[in-house]
Image 1 (cartoon, rainbow, N blue to C red):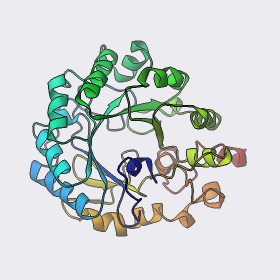
Image 2 (cartoon, rainbow, N blue to C red):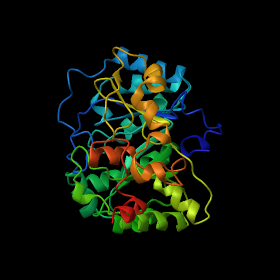
Image 3 (cartoon, one colour):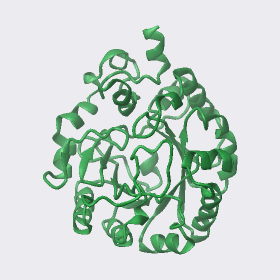
Length: 345
């Protein structure tokens, strides 16, 4: 069972029929200046954003196709005045509603309380360092670290599920153990986003194959008091298998996951922003199930190079987002994998 569905007590769905999770980038507006922002966030809202009615329709489409988890993200979704209405629509649809606000001055205790009251089941907050110097350096705004810790306390007081996300880069990798200690007793789940060089994220901040392997092996061996999962690191499943650890199957770009941009583009993920269609002209279910891009990402036989020949192709499949970001081909080798690196050398 996947990390996304295990807490819901549900069997995993047929990933060819419906994604486990749909994430909607409600806006690209955000007042943070994160150095690794995949959205290249901007200070003002885009006039071309999906409207409230279009957002409600998107939510209905996701629920109707069998999606289990719907995430409202950004940018900063609190920049939308209709965000509570959209949270309520997602919650009323029967899907598990995730809410991922940016930690700015807008994220007050009252705002978090309103989001939970509207129906947000899980609050996602980002913590990219164990100290203010590291985290605020990522976020580009002084005080972000202190506001994040305060927001975590508020979520705990509200009794909501808290998911903390950490972007793993060469700047943050050395602080992962300290971050894990700092969130123990506060979180339900820790999500490690392994950097994909897209948006503002620079290639030189991406871990090398050996660094990826070292972090993933540390994670597999870590005795953490909360659930942990990875994003853009399906190689974690191969690492766990090699170490004899319990399997943690999960979604990959376009395979159990779909992303809708602020303008309605339907993409395999937020890190693989290749638009297959737009919700203003196409149905979400039709695009996910039948578009050649999505179909190819769910077919291991279409992978190229070492990833296509690997014994772990079905279990892992490599990060299709990272392959695209580095090579321009979403079906190419995942350059973070040491098995790929060994063959190339």
